[in-house]
Image 1 (tube, helix red, strand yellow):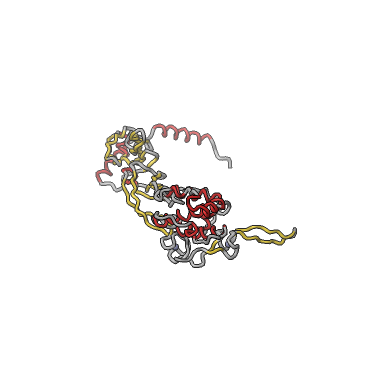
Image 2: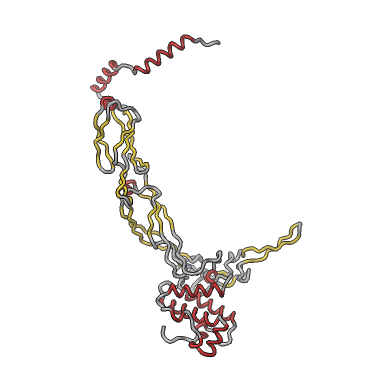
Amino acid sequence: MSEKRDYYEVLDVSKDATEADIKKSFRKKAMQYHPDRNPDDPEAANKFKEASEAYEILADSEKRSAYDRFGFSGVESRFSNVNSGDFSSVMDIFNSIFQNDFSGDDIFSSLFGRRRARRPSGPQKGSDLLMNYGISFEDAIYGTKKIIDVPIKKPCPDCSGIGAEKGASPETCPECKGAGIVMVSQRTAFGTFSTQQTCRRCNGGGEVISKPCKTCRGTGDSREDERIKLDIPPGVDTGFRLRVRGKGEKGRLGGPRGDLYFRLIVDSHLFYKRQNDNIIVELSIPYPIAVLGGDMIVPTPYGPEKVKIPKKTKEGNVLRLSRKGIQRKTQYGINYGDFLIIVHYAIPGKLSENEKELLTQLKDKMPLPKKQEKLFQKLIDDSKKYKVNH
Ligand SMILES: [Zn+2]
Ligand SMILES: [Zn+2]
């Protein structure tokens, strides 16, 4: 900043301005030049710092009289030592002043027309955002890189997040006169009670916007697509969260942006089913292989595997291919799940004449299951001992 301007001039007030005048004028300036509303504008940032400094001195009766008598040399402002490039320290000082001067009257809620529970002062990190993001089974297994456009909430560019039309600013709510609360009287059998209620006109903000911004319809928000690069590691499953630092909502008062989280949702697969790091498949095998044993080629995400089917494999038996399941990187190295095969007997569909003949031969020669035959004989004998008593 070049030549230092007179504090009264900065705040646009006369030498005999009252404390209320000074406060009112400063609110106006602060609102106009607040960095939240003028991102990346060094001119506004300087104006904001200048106004804050003037306010720090003039709002304090002792400092003000020292300034009136001795000029700049009579007062020392915390702002004057701050390099204008280092904006977060300006915000720190600014906030510490407002903790004293506007206690119980959150200046930022009035600045921005919203009143919430009193916020902690100082720069605040923006909110984290969470998005669900669907990926294919293959992308989850092998990992992939994605480029996505994510709509991020930003202050409306036309009204800088205020919600009022250009040139207009929020006005004191006529309903509650800016208090944000109204008294409501209720007559009951026990007498008349007065209770405080949040003003409906301004939703407790104390200010109303009579000329809403046309771009954002008064909400102050705009959604802007932001290009995000996602690096999805191999082996992820549904519920896995990826963090993209600094891509969440904008911070307050120069605070950093929040983070953006992607919660992955993995599509199901035609053949492979996943259970933790294991892959489970259902395999149909011809009955002779189940009886006599044999080899079968089974696809896995990492290539075909020759699977040895042991003889006398029963329907529903589970075969395990160790370490052929999901491959996932952990802090201890690659973790390998297993590949589990549930065996089912296949009933053949259409048969050739030759097959039909072979099966018929087999049917005629095949002994019945011995255990079952024994049991059946016992049950038949049993039934002869009893007669139904009609
Ligand atoms: Zn707007
Ligand atoms: Zn109101």
